[in-house]
Length: 343
Image 1 (tube, rainbow, N blue to C red):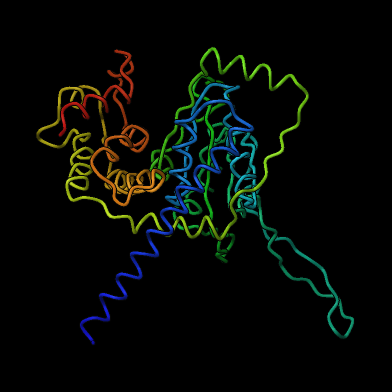
Image 2: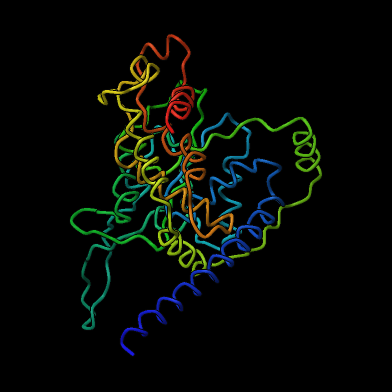
């Protein structure tokens, strides 16, 4: 009897995981349909956002103005029926404008005597899904207000640490072409983002549809298709997705191949990379490969899932050299060379 009990328990756990995997795949389709009512095209961007969502990570959306980056994030929040917080980053934004602050409040006690006490007023970061819009338009001191929140999911104000809601995820946007009035994102903050998602121009047919929709006067009506409990359940599933040993080894090899210090670095890395991706890069590759498999309804992640996630998971973790800028070499060029050279 004792020997059979673990088998029965394991069988029940596997059956539960299989059911949850099917639920995840169906939920992804419902989310895609809901987002399609607001955004035309951008299928790859939406998939990367959903991978971030189910991995319980944070994402940085990069693209020129007018490509619906903000609309994508707000639409996702509405489709998920999550508490949504938006912070418009500006040069005069202060850390307290994001995290909140202590205020002195007067009140009467039971004897009618007036007293004062400090009360914490939570900022917009206390939400399930936070949009940090144009995150590079505020100075590093204010950007740093996100560091503890993104890593520990907590905020310290004064001497008191406040827990953030569960789930808590940040989707930030950045304009890559505007330089005046912007500040570079610190490498430590970039490393907190699970993925960097680039939003490209739509196709001609998609742009025609955008022009029709946005000038018709029709208001968007995105109905929630998932709730907070669903997001928690699916987020708990992703780490449990199996991944092949070959895929794990490949994830580590790809990450280490971006480091100049590694003795076998390829020419593109030696010539154009100052600092490669750290261990968080390997972790991001494995976790997002699992999420990608879950989105497709696959029971396990493999090397193809890892290879598909290399660019969004590693590009923001590379620090390129001045020679790369002079030669017009981008992070994606280096990563494609690494992919071609690593099997």
